[in-house]
Length: 320
Image (tube, rainbow, N blue to C red):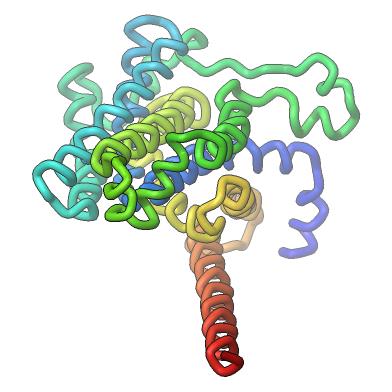
């Protein structure tokens, strides 16, 4: 099996597929990162992506415009995230339970909503048309470069936006007053409040940004990746994003690399599934095995770092 896989790992089409598969994971990872920086664990990413994907597809079909669909998905993502913020911050509901409720709504409620609006059951394949699919972009100079052009050119518009947002997220968090407030609230809300920062307002903003990014991820899934909405299409990417955020140590660039790792795992699963004699159960477990291994490595490195700091503090006490 390994001899069959290795020659294909460095082919342009395989590397192209890694970037394509990584994009929705990256949107969700950046969403998890911004919320976490504000001290909020947005565990409802999966549900937000599912609901946004559905309304993005339906609105794109009704308007016959992929751009309208993306805007609607973004708006729905923000709306659901603000709803989570209201229940959590104003009604004092546990944010984890709120996120679980959103995930349940995304898993089951979307099927009911699809039937309510269209009479369809389970998917929107019959609605698909070129007008409602996110277009691809062939970059003029880049596409002419041998091998590199085949990997980096020809992706969907949202793929390029996903990787550009890594830089924009870094700018937001480390180069703007809003980013400073988000990090301050996440590190010590009492200290932030003591200098006049509205903790609830900042958490509302962070969750809204998180919802917007999740909405874009949902739009990508239904309007490009799957080319239609179907039940369970997000397939755990919201939860994988939480792991990717942790593995990336809560930093935008680290989040990008960890998302690429999970994108590689997903692409590898697709590649291995085409080999005869390989168990489908083994193939489907590849991304989740990578998630567990990644979190194990992250936990081990974190433990070593904390232990090292503890030893250094003890040495400082002795020297004093």
